[in-house]
Amino acid sequence: MLTRLNKHLIWVILLLAFFVRAYQINVTPALNPDEAAIGYDAYSLIQTGKDEHGISWPLHFKSFGDYKPGGYFYLVLPFVKLMGLTPLAVRLPNLILSIITIYFLYKLIFLLSKSKELSLLSALILAISPWHIHFSRGAWESSAALSFIIIGTYFFYISKVKNFFWNFSLFVIFFALSLYIYHSARIFAPLIALSYILTNLKLILTKFPKILFPLLIGVLLVIPVGVSFLNNGGATRFGGVGLTADQGPLWRANELLNQHQQNLRITDRIIHNQKNLYLISWGEKYFSHFDLNYLFISGDEVPRSKVPDMGQFYLIELLFLLLGLVFILKFKQYSALKPVIFSWLIFAPLASSLTFQAPSALRSLPLLIPLSVLISIGIYQFFLQISKTNKLKIPLIIITSILFIYSFTYYLDAYFIHYPKRYPFAWQYGFDELVPYVMANKDKYNSVYITDKYDQPYILFLFYSKYSPSQIQKEIKLTPPDKFGFSTVNHFSNLYFQKIDWDKIPSNSLVVTSDETVPVTPLKNIYFPNKSFAFKIYIKP
Image (cartoon, rainbow, N blue to C red):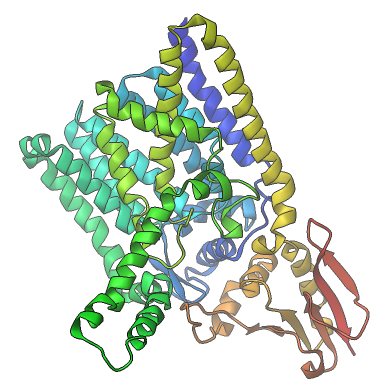
């Protein structure tokens, strides 16, 4: 009876996960520019066989001067073909993959622990995780890449048990495909794959002839993405967001050297070398991902990557995380899990720590997996130990369940009610209403001037208006890159995206502002979910 119940519980967990991730996914949160770029380029490929810049079927898509891995663009393409250019079509592939992630984590934990209860608990903790839900509800390439890595990990470990050649081949293929989806996976996936091989080296050597063909397939899959990356601004991208983009250590080194005035010794130059300071900066950024305040109280500093007044995990999970660390080290039954958990803990923050924006919940998303499993081990073993004391077991189960239900409910309230009102500017609320109005009226005026206060407004106009891809390919022209390497489009058709200066705008123009001062009464107002002004629309006669 219990076995049958356990068998059905995973489907209940997956159904819960799907409902939470699918509810209002087309409108909450609003579409952001990165998502719009993915959707519009998929739409452009369908219409013309080229992206918005006129490149035929690229492996890396030029987007705002940056080059994004093309994997998720191609995952989106059939959904846009079937459903049209909509937020749902852009987000649905990641939603589906996020559910697959939960399922394969369940299978992986059962495979390595032989515990049905722990595998179900791990799936449930991930299903209700604020960190995972957040990055499952948008077109986040990091979440899609994580799914491929989890699937590949399962096939690696199942290959030890049966059908080595085929399962090892699937491991190689899924890991190779993850490199096509997200930049950070190109650091994390190879390191994790190497850790699997080194911790199972004896088996790999005995199976050596059988791994040659899968490795050859892996190399053939990796070569195109590597060549495309090097030829399409990979180094420029890292220069824009990499650790050295932060000039702080350089300025600090110069400041410390100047304090020695004219008495500089060679030891002073060694001590205050900027490379040393960058190394210290890297260490701070790496370990910041394990800051308990970040994980359980405040969360990511980037509004698009967090909900208000919450960490990446529920506060109640802190206790079980600490217990999980103790139990995984104490009990031999977790010996098969240890290499996986600790290799993920070590390597997951690495890609994020090599950028100047750390800790980053987006770039370090794989860290979610080992921490969730440790929390699950903590819960499972805690209640297993107290089950010997019948007086405490039931009350503690009730209290813990109530606290988790409260935390989950609090998160849903924060995400669906308060998040759109607290950070509407981070998600470009209002464009879905603004674009149809402007496109319906733009031909009545010589020109339309639109504020550039919000990130990359041009791509949202292309997306919501379904602007002709063949036309934009003739018109598109990027501005020079900014200090982070990003560009934008400030003009197409008779639309101009810029800071609004009323006195410099010509007559017979439609003008869209955010908070710029304009000396006339607006024709129309568009509001954020919190009822503050998103846009004001004017006519300059």
